Length: 303
Image (cartoon, rainbow, N blue to C red):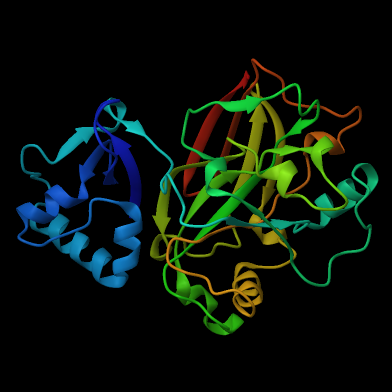
């Protein structure tokens, strides 16, 4: 399933929808038509676990090919928000998780040239999240080195505490796309949260694809363009630490909860690694995507 958070109009409340072809079907509304209660928000839906997905499937099955009036709108007529507009806690970011990116970072960002032996973890606060089409803010008083990183995002579906790698994928609710925007000149004594956690620095969407529809999260093409020019292009098979390792490592020390997000790292091709270096500026447009999930597109604006 392709789950989205959307608004019918600017004034209306955010709602949970499921994308069927070119329509957005309101989850709570289709549930009512089928005689079952389904949540109206993404986090509430994730909290319910497998029963929510089963209930939604049953509700859609009852009306296959003949959706009741008032439960669906054309996708082109709604505004998509970030799938989880306000995460409950910080996003878990993973640094230096593709071999080629380790090399380019060592050349230009003074990080270690050796491959990490454990996942490198940082975080982005919930206030960093923006949805499809929203603007990435360029604050020229803070940064002259605004950079891009396309990433596969993993959304946790169950409480995970000291989970083994063998069972880790059972705790995944679904997958999405995230751009890890980074102000390279805002790193502080090796700490990254100020560089990566500023407002609008976590573009996220356009949907969450449930885990059952992604056969292998480690065989997905991912890419990023700036103003239509290709900057990054790789495949998640090149992750240094795969998704089960990341979940096992984080949950060994910090409990993962439903709705938690792990941004799994970026391949090479970031602006800091180019010769000469390239940065994002007001007027630029960044577009990024992951195979089987979708793409997000964001303008850069001055603030």
